[in-house]
Length: 627
Image (cartoon, rainbow, N blue to C red; front, side, top):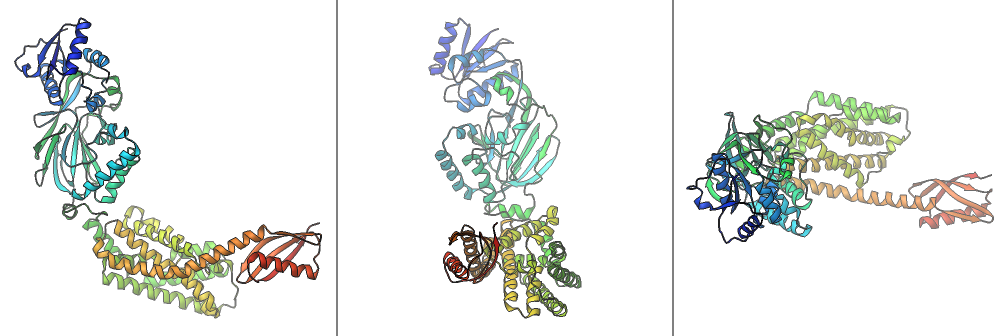
């Protein structure tokens, strides 16, 4: 076999070292400058060796594909990405030995128009998909954070453009994106790592990775994962799509710059095409191993989730927003449902009154399952979610419609509860009733989380059934019923405490649902600010008594823990306390003593308990004597 060694500059250190090694090994090689390649007469079946710039290497590969010649690359030390891509050796003697051995396998080549693409072709701006992950992996956490901050600053300059792509199967695709990356091999760029399971060196397909973030938050989440956490997503991010085809024609609404292997040389429209099994290239064994195991030859496309309607494309074309923007179709559908469900109707009232009656009897018989059934039946959550959207969008008709339904619904629940509590000849506080009489800041947290869940479930038709679970998580009707029972009994403290729990749930859900709808793109921030300010003010006001109640609950827990650990000896009698309960200024507990206490010892025990509590308290005890 004849060998030809092609080079760019004869004085290049790698060329000189290679010549010396070949001479030492007595390998007969003809030296040729790459500029001589077009006029050279190279025998059929010869093997080409090449040391050159990326452009020079591509020139040799293109020539070899035309003349059916094999090629071996002897890389320069600075060509780290090339070494990583083809698993070449960075040690000079080993790289020569690898290049001298002709490959028995042929690989595809990617072309942009008529120019060979060895690493990647970048259309538009696609940070960080056009960067090599191998360089990021070698950086420390400080350098990765710096890279993350640099990319974050670039985001404000990115905006969407409309793309029209036609595949080899004449499939026409329309969407908006900030850019795309075309690759042929698993070259360890961020783009190729996302679709590494689909990259095969000889499947007759090129791969186009499309970057189309709909919000800054979504985009920064992906960059944070790749740069700070140094991880590749296990599944394709929602902002990324791909096309695997033999060829793609790419057009954009306005010309976008096209960069081929780091050199910006073209602009859209362009055509990318694959030349199947074009050249036998000597590469490392790792190159074959990191190629996909299955040779897919069918065209595959995944771009349906990318923004495609005109409204969203126009919105994203100005600047990528902080939060995603809901499409007109999605917004119209949700708004229509919220208007319908927020309106006052006979069905709403009937269900609410039935739920009230079920909840009231469940509270009286102390049955949690019956109360849960009432929560599922009550439709009060629907107008509350409508109020959240009306407040966010400053839509007076939706807001007032929802508030009217809530007000009438609350009045109906209260009146029904008062009448039934007055008619029933029972006035006993059950544990289910008592559980609604001590709201704390923790109840507000539950309401906020439930509001997030309610808005998210409402905006997604696939999980709308989860709204029932939200209704159980945050009780709306039961505290209202307890409040009505309190009025029926004339117990004003019971009325106020239960009503505070309902108001807590109400304002917590409204604030959280409004914020969730904002994050999901149903309102621009400048429209939402006023409504969110109102909601946050209400939450702040409600938080004051809740925080006080939480502090009181925390104090009670600390006192219970202190008294549980309390042990003393009066005379020769050892004493400790169990089953401690605090009710205002009253301590109820069981006293475990080794013998009967005298009156003086009982007074001393009361004094010691008051001392442990930190204030004078009324002590009610039951005595148990250890035998």
